[in-house]
Image 1 (cartoon, rainbow, N blue to C red):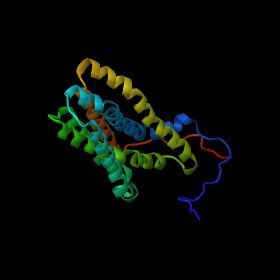
Image 2: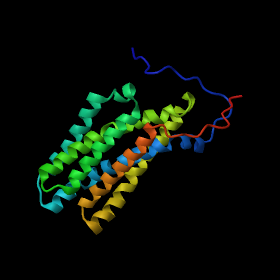
Image 3: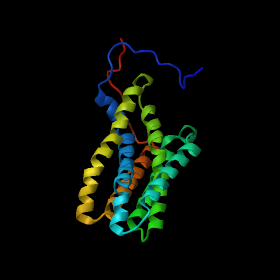
Length: 211
């Protein structure tokens, strides 16, 4: 028998707030997960090209390092957001991702680049679930599906925009600069998360009547 993870939420009759109001509550966690996604997408798309441009071998091992870091952290620390809150977990994760991207940017050799890929994977792993928890906490229970849909769109948008933008950066400034941008994005995400952790305000809902 499969047990539900959470009690069922009864359908709510009457007017529902417009999506713009829901977005007003979740945009900060959404922006954070989008900024995290820049480094994620940059590594996935440009790590092999970076190695090729440097004349290094073993790019596939670097992608494996990323995957190992990502999965290991998710398995070992997946319950942390529920235990200590989403913002602290995301803050540490984004700082780890920023360090990983910095190692990729400055790597003097393939070993350092692979270490950067490992740290990037570890850092990216918990940002989505941690910020997802922060997003659903900001809306009433019956709007959590809408909130998660809007929240996930920020990450999808980051993935879609990163490829063309990173390609332009690589063509004009070199492949290493792609990871500089990823590191800056992760650091900016950490700064926004710090505000969330310190109790950044969210607007109140209007027109929530269910009559």
